[in-house]
Image 1: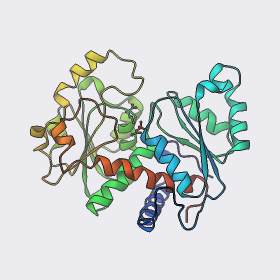
Image 2 (image 1 turned 90 degrees about the vertical axis):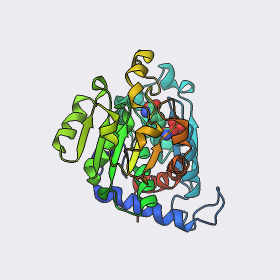
Image 3 (image 1 turned 45 degrees about the vertical axis):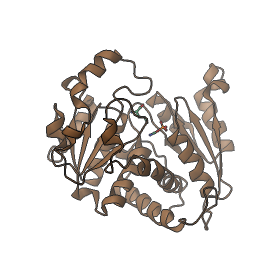
Image 4 (image 1 turned 180 degrees about the vertical axis):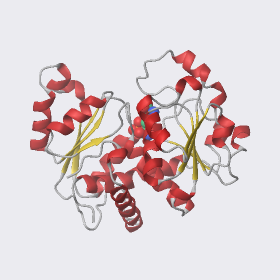
Amino acid sequence: MHHFIHLKDISLVDLRKILTDAKKRKKNRKNLNTLQIDKDAPLRGKFLIQMFEKSSLRTRLSFNLAIKQLGGGTITLRPNELHLGQGGESLEDTAKILSTYGDGFMLRTDDDKKIDEFAKYSRIPVINGLSPSSHPTQILSDIFTIEELTKKNISNLKISWVGDSNNVLNSLIASSVKFNFELSIGCPKNYTPKKNIMRWVKKFKNKISIYNNAIDAIRDADVIFSDKVISLNDKVNKSKKLKSFQKFKITSSLIKNAKKNYIFLHCLPRGNEVEEKVFQSKNSQVWLQALNRIHVQKSILLYCFGKLR
Ligand code: CP
Ligand code: NVA
């Protein structure tokens, strides 16, 4: 079994295996209905336990569908209905009980330490469904979408991120190092990635650049990513932060600096960081991006359960 917590800790060989499997599975179930099970039903009888300490639409639904399409079942726990959430049971005991009943545990939390603790005490794979420091399942799926659309290896593309230095960007930085692609980041000076992430950026300085203006960051980009300026449970002075990002909005005039056939991606939900016209344009692939989460979660689950062929 394998945990799936941060992309930086997973080998490129395994990440590639996940993407290849997702491609095959997506193709093979073209004519199947949403809840029909893949022919090989590789996770028949397996039980995924999910818990969201923060809101979720896409991650929740894509994991539900993913495990069901693989032949397994799932439940979503509400943290406030567990003894753990009420302070009446330790994380260690909770993790051991989850390992007794379930075969995998997917957690969205506001506390990275909690995921590490669950991984320490669990005998089943733990998946990070978004934490303050990363959103690995999202970015791996986005790489899938980019390669599906461009039919190119991502290492031959220039990827830009214009926005906050948040969990999604951290995973994008880790994947830039893993998959060896050029990443150009545009963010205000006071909102550059944290020190531990900057160490990675420095190590990889020929491929990752940080600009404090959006035009330079977006220049000649094949793919442009954006995300909410204010993340879930972001404990900041919101109006001050939003003001700092005013010049980092993805507008039709800014986007002219990208390649003509650029792809626009956004993990959603969105705020005001992208102009409606860009978001709804033919270059925007946000709906396919969301759909592909199902296909990639399936291969992530197979990797975690030790069933990836
Ligand atoms: N992109 C994403 O993770 O969406 P949810 O917060 O709706 O799960
Ligand atoms: N950066 C966002 C991603 C939401 C899917 C957040 O953490 O809220």
